[in-house]
Image (cartoon, rainbow, N blue to C red; front, side, top):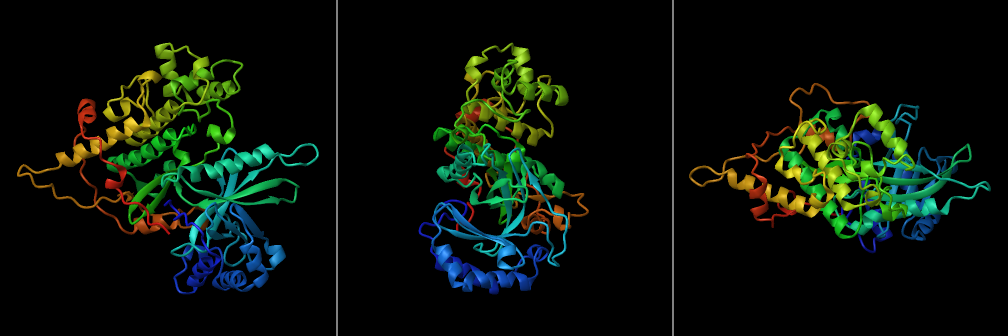
Length: 469
């Protein structure tokens, strides 16, 4: 079972029951900032009661959607009803740039290399409305105005990739419809649950302790080792592509944005974001004729040399051709950089030796000596077991501790963003209202003791899974 429950044979009756439940539960205030109660009830009643609409919804196949434009329905908001790859229906409300008073207001936009998006809400969540993101990807057309079918296939593969993983720490997206704007441009819509990018947590007054980072590392390494075991390479691992969620005070992280996965692009060329490229990726794109040569050259000139590039220069690496293809070792390096930055609050440098025994193997400049994601996970799990054993009193009784929150409000926090356009998801407000103490972490063991330790400790022993729908 995955994050959304991944219901098999989800029935339309269950969808309607979830909508009817909205009459009995408290609606989040943040949703009412975007639509008033009367307008919300009108939309829900329309979906439940219209017989013609019911037949259209029932005719949906998996990965299909119907978009109901407010100009056609005369309802206050545009909404989409989709059917996901395993048969679950979803009602997505596109709140975008309107407040509950129907006046224009500023809104939080999301922008990436190939997609942009705005806020949305899934109204039929298991426990009530959930904050979503409504994404759109601009589609290419030929001289005759025909859509690029290869691009459409890539988008569908990107969405289906996560369903192939069937793992909690990959972020699910759902296909919407193809729309056309006033300028004649076509867009493919996509929807996903809203999270906070890993590099934006502190913007909301949230700090993460070393123990929290330990758990982040285990979650991501478990997911990465599963992807590699299935033959997939993620390629573009960076903090902005890791989303944070909370359940019962626990922080969960998920890999997001899989447009660079070779299986999605049908292209094996190495690709990543500057700063997170391994030495071999940096080297492979150093040729002046390489398609990404200018990107890396200009990036180094603007931001300085990355750790990967520094290793190329120091160790005189030279195997350009052999490193031009996507490889799991590049993912391990990129995640190693992400974790180093989390622990040390700065980027690694060739002038500062890596003292953390858990990260040394992930950031080994020689690919042949670099450890795998599974080996790195075993080391982090062994370290966790070592820490538990170390936290014992002299009389062999466990040291008394309290549960550690995985999201802890910063001690100096004076205010939390409150305007709709820059507010974090609802779970941030809930956590900031319930501060908890930190947990003391034992001294780090050596690499030798980690390798020799018991490697059977698994992720599910330190963090409960999300409840399934």
